[in-house]
Image (cartoon, rainbow, N blue to C red; front, side, top):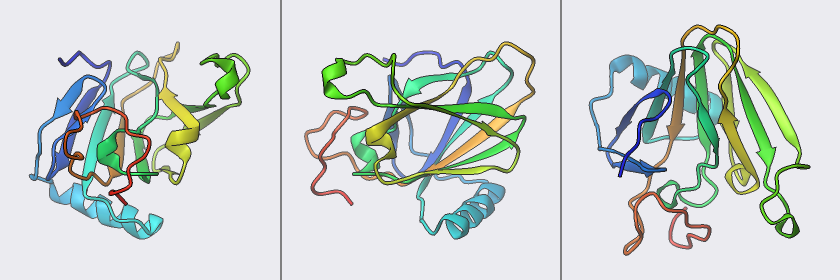
Length: 173
């Protein structure tokens, strides 16, 4: 069952994408500008991407909470390229707590990165295993920000429920 996200989103890719409690239908109607941006991001990153999740943060109240992009459809140790356009927003990361902390994030390492217009942020290798990230609500006025997150999506493993986590994916790159 879906839910209302505190930002606007749209999806481009040949496969559907399920995350949290939302499923985005396959959409192969890429705007030519998005294809140009994908090419530039691929050249800058040295990676190839087959899909794009677009996020519009309309103001300081739009956000995305703490999460990791670790759905099975992203494969093992995915690379995600995040291109920011528009107003600056703070991108926060926090280290996953050690097992003995029982999910307590009180003393974990935290990093805050202001993402200004034109910034390309790459999350690769074990980023999604080792860290969570968010764009939190802010308490001062912010203009609109578009965040283009390029990624590679694979078909869901057979018998796996879409959108759920899969830590070990031996048949996916």
